[in-house]
Image (tube, rainbow, N blue to C red; front, side, top):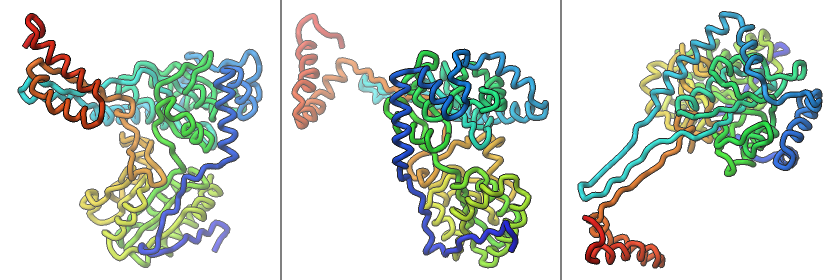
Length: 441
């Protein structure tokens, strides 16, 4: 085997376990707590100090501006190749159209006894979006987080992204995407200090009601720490894909799709669950061949060695049972009649059906959101959508006759819980309604 050889862990479906954990890095958590405490206490001064220490040394200069002027965002857009402008614009249109389909109407029911119970949707007032700028820049993340908020009707959207060490500004692709979407409140700050600023506000960065967007370990830990003081979309971990493959699957496609996840992060996961026992060797040969041509091959190879596996299953049903037990972020069904098995996949962030639907179409262009639950959290949560930037608000209307009809049951329940004042708030209205000249039916 060559220098890029990857020997994937091989297990049967009966033995395989996806062993992701959410153990907290205590040293990192201590740093995150220090950062949050100083930002809460010192505001902009702390933001500049931490930014100078961690991202851009010039941030402590008195002339360093946390806010990125709209003209700088516009310049970033204008300097993009036309082909990239067209790609971002087309992707944004598709993402917006799909998310507009998620808007929900009001609900109202009445039993004809004078009671009306309803529910309406209200957008949150201010949303904060974190756009990473570490190992790579992700303008697609700007689209995926900002557009659902805009569709939801959020009035003010704030975007934060770390400065590049060379320029002291966010990555040009991030700034260009923000400009294209009409987001002009952009701040040059990243890491845990950016999360703290969005959660608690500083002299320059306004406090938001909910924040969204992926980041590194420190961003994830900071989101966990501020949750409750501000709304948080999710605590995402490294990306992952499970590929269910049968004898019809092309090993070159499988290897390419595994590498598409592995190049994200050394802790990214890529698993193939297959009913074709002879497929494993062919996948490993393709991985070696394709890895040699990959610019981020060191990252991808480390990820495959840490979290890569080929799992053999006796049937498609058994293979999908592995998926449901693991509840991964992405699932690809590279099997015959893939759409017939969608109903069997119960726990996954997103599903991609058929040989010509690789996961990157969802990352960039199909229109679905790529902010998805990781590390088994698809068991209880969903990908980012319009509803994440809205609140459900209920309302109730009773007529006098309705209250009189329901009073006995309400007071019996209040008495059972020992809440006399609750019962009295009903009883006083019954007495008042029976007093001459009081109340209306």
